[in-house]
Image 1 (tube, one colour):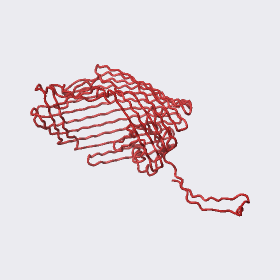
Image 2 (cartoon, rainbow, N blue to C red; image 1 turned 90 degrees about the vertical axis):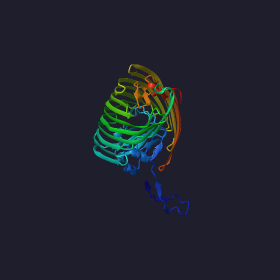
Image 3 (cartoon, rainbow, N blue to C red; image 1 turned 180 degrees about the vertical axis):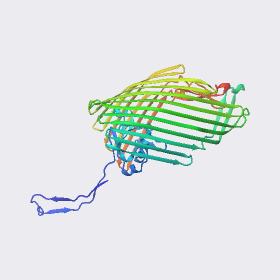
Image 4 (cartoon, rainbow, N blue to C red; image 1 turned 120 degrees about the vertical axis):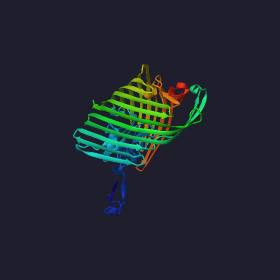
Length: 528
């Protein structure tokens, strides 16, 4: 807050009154000028955090939570950032994609302002629809190291991390490492399942109620992350290269239950599920931005991940039932995306997007249901967006993309192509009001786990598998949002959302498992 006390001396001109040659002074009341910490227009909403907010914030997510930006929803527990209507928000720091490590290690005192964009026409934002961009204080040289330690009681979670940033002229280097240890003796849950079988174990139709009550739970998790990034940043060029390694080890995830049934075919008993897993991944990601001219910018982001997962599961119930499901998975993920923006004038913005993503997964199953599954999934897309901005009050745009998808899953081929469309409009009559409208039509595709053809046994009554032939399903949605910023203390956002899904993927239960038991599988049917 800036306070100014002004004294004004007025001098009368001419000789029209008796006091024309005299000087009169008057004491005025205090004049308070309050700077606006938030303003909004059709292109971007800008929020300036207060000093007390920056000093009190532990990290970037904590700062956003304290700022209470009306267009976004922040969950400080899960560290997620979404729009007020539940869409994911892409986070950037000085136009560079921010990782979770960047957000944890941010020195919040260096935040100058926070920008929120909808459908930005800047190649550095990589075609994202909703963007938070932190604008930071820049330094010629220097750096800092941030140590963080947390302890939770009840679930016995301990977390420690170190983040170091060093800047020298045009280069910036980041190093992050953390350790998380978690134990929990309250895992598991109670459940009641009601089954209707057509011919269970050859004994004809049966209705069985299975009641599972937890009697013990033991869980332990150790995870480590380490990453290093080198950033070259000038006015016309940004080059970022990052290498990261992550390891998650769950040596124990054990649950014991008491089982009772409504049918005498299954006597009351106790079950015990013993599970362990170990996942690690080595990842490279590169971000390259080049300002080709005053009107044209090109952003290229590329990444490659190699990972390996081990999962061991042993379920026992009764004296004669033991179900072992062990799996080893190798993961290869390769992606390259190009984003080209062309701004021929102040009002017209064009963004062309092209991308290739290819995943290769090999899963070997051991135990009661041994098999080997190979996944070869490719996604290719080409899109064009246009935004028209005028008078900082109107921002109207549309986008069209075409996506080609190839699936090769253990000998089953499923190829598809479909469009993605979007229209949007933003109206900001002044820096305190904004009305936003968007509508989308496109397709969503099931994940690899939903398409796995391997059939695995879960317990004495249930099996599950995926459906390799699953097709994509269409969605249509529309959003109308209003934001009002009356002053620095008050903010208001109201949304109206309509969404529909056609031929969505659903989970079905059918008594078609071995010996007439229940099979849980994924299929597709019309619905919304």
